[in-house]
Length: 486
Image (cartoon, rainbow, N blue to C red; front, side, top):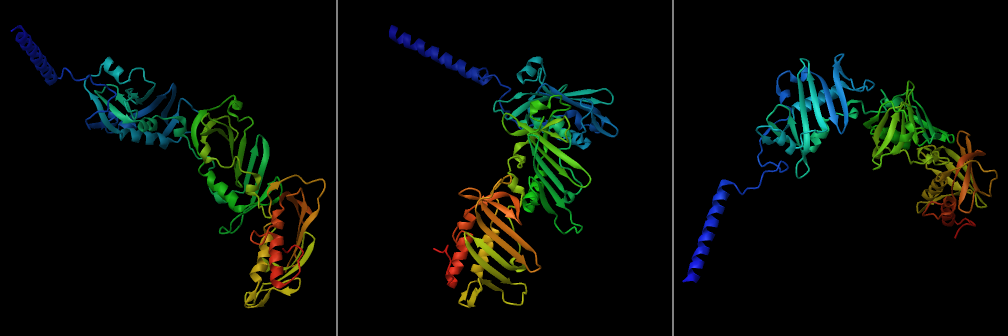
């Protein structure tokens, strides 16, 4: 009997416990306390900047103060636009401030909480002692303050609250960053601002305070004609127009990303005294220079200054592509090149052998006639070797720089001499002298051309457009003896 009594009592206890659990559950006593960092389930939205919803509210704002990460920036209306009263030396664009105001008035976000705003509630949402807020000062002295709080649990949103309102909203991280105004958001980010980029006629690049490349353009009086570029340093010769024009095009993407320090007293700490790189672009009326110093610790940005001023900015490193380009990038690397239709004769000496090439290709109505050492390269329709003859010209025109160097004290062995005679009587002579076992110096009309190239340009086979290879190929086809033939 005692055994059954114990069992009955145990069942009664369990039943009472279960009843109590379901009662508590129904009453919500067992639900976890809500956390402000949980993403709200509801989709109720409303204006984050409630005061800006009133008609004429934006126009009534006379001053705005942005506070972020211990820094601040304030702007006020003046002279029909906006000026920075915290940084009077900053030349801001007034419409940028107007755009910020417009974006604020149009910002709607989900409600995270609605009800009585207490000190404890503000603490829950990280809205006490926040270092991210915006204050608006109206003409009548009214002050509105919008505060950004902490992140929610998933880290994608911030809590934000307009003082005096009974609603706390949840807004995306990007919204906060786009609404907080920094100096870089208010200034013109364009650096190379020319009225007509087609009139740019000068570019110079220096590294560590020393000249690196100088380029000069001859502007055409005919708008449709492209300008022609010449290199004036480190040597004087034609420039590579496509590479130089590409540089100018790319400069359009170089923008100021952020203001670091205005009126900096120590430019050396940013690597800007002297600058590691300096690019100056000119047209007939003005010059604009960009100086680049150190990169930031993450290597994402360069510290930069404009026109030698002591104002320091950040510029995206990805947008700057001229810092590591060799001088050869902007130089016409080919020693000599002219249309074969302008030639009458070429005297070629290469590795001890001599050839004479003649050209008759001026009249479009006539068959092109080419000879090598007096032999016509067109024999009949089945043995037309004019294409092989032109390969020799391509190989000769392929002589090009692989590096620049000061003129040597002594020339090495003469490896190749090419004398081009044009139909108008112009004569141009290209000479190649050994520099070492694999490279050769170039001379143009008896003067040092400023650099050297690879000897394989002479010795490669026909497939790879070597001069000796293309000559040997044609000589074999024509039955001409040639010592370099395989």
